[in-house]
Length: 250
Image (spheres, helix red, strand yellow):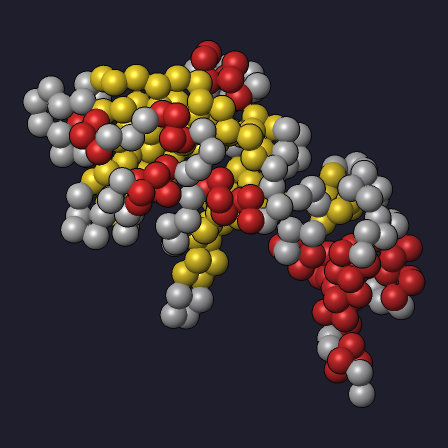
């Protein structure tokens, strides 16, 4: 007995359509056949077909476009929040083309909240670096990084490698992180850099990174437009997975 013969019909259809999608039978801008036609081709009801399509949508393989039908989904990348890989390294490993531009860097006294997070008393200074990340030719992330000045990192070191790798090279490997996610609307300068209208919604990550002995060595604020990002949580009986999904769709 074949595997498909043992499966419920909607799962067998899901498997078959998944294979056809992954083989490239339909391009990104090519609609799948109408639901009635697809259902007839598999000899099932539209309700059974829709169960399969919902699973494919949950898998990130198809998307419904109102009034137009069902299409192969645009590519999505995932960034797992439960490990410590750098954002750019993680997405590059999935095939994303990431260009990072350093928009500015300066030695300065940080804002009071950042000074508190990094445990910097008085007038202690940081290296503040602003970077713009472009994913698959789409402006995607505006990132402000604060590193205690005494660590001795130069902005030039960050052109071709991640901050995590640079910190490790200076003797401060990151061992843990604390992250909070908030929502905001884009201000004028942010909207211009990210190529979105003023006031567009965005997700904002506030992440503090620590060495093994608990020393805070980096605080990052990353702004990601809401039209390409979502926070995705998978819960199981004994575990939980939390990740960003970055969608290349414009």
